[in-house]
Image (cartoon, rainbow, N blue to C red; front, top):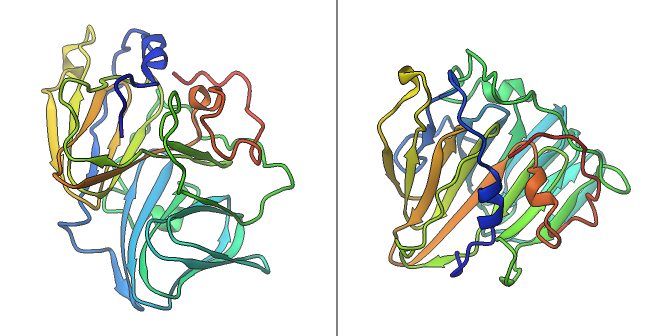
Length: 304
């Protein structure tokens, strides 16, 4: 998952703006392996969790189970860790292999798993019906003044349609994980970590104005969180060291300092999710693997 030198190091060094006050929010933890699903019918079990700008829907499906969206307002993401799916949208259809990521256009669509298995879908908070299903639906009722309002990125070359990408991409020196981007999300499949992460090579860092969602699909992890000291002591919190299994998801608020340590003896699979996409990662040559399809980068986005 991590080489001797983390390729994000230079980016971390640049992200050094002093912490402002009155910004601290609680992390959002969802342990799908320990809690009952919010939906359990029609051959599928679905767990929901929200962040400031998004909803994550983790599902386990029986063969033939489907997931439909009617009038979806914007592009959404389908992660297929194991088994294939048939994706239909606006009269188009595509068979997508397992171990893939797909982007689905707005409008009416359906994802069917002919062999069953796991599927993760990612929607923006514009999907109000899905926000309402989240156990932490009220966690953002007070708003987050330090997180800019969500704005989609430019549409891809050739317009919005079903697009799918194989995740079987070998590691490459100087590239961080396997990053894919659409108009609404950036998803980074970190390289599989075999065995525990070296505790002498962690990567604590923070983000000034956007959340990070870390989705564990296999193995176990400890999320280390440290709240910065601002001049306002009411912002201060004790350090957190959150041990989780898989599947689980943690939404880390800015500007909390964080790093995640794989701890399982076997394979540890982690996916980092950002909504909207990150500008800094997008500007690194070769990091975004589908950059040819989504080539435009908005200007003057103050992400750090």
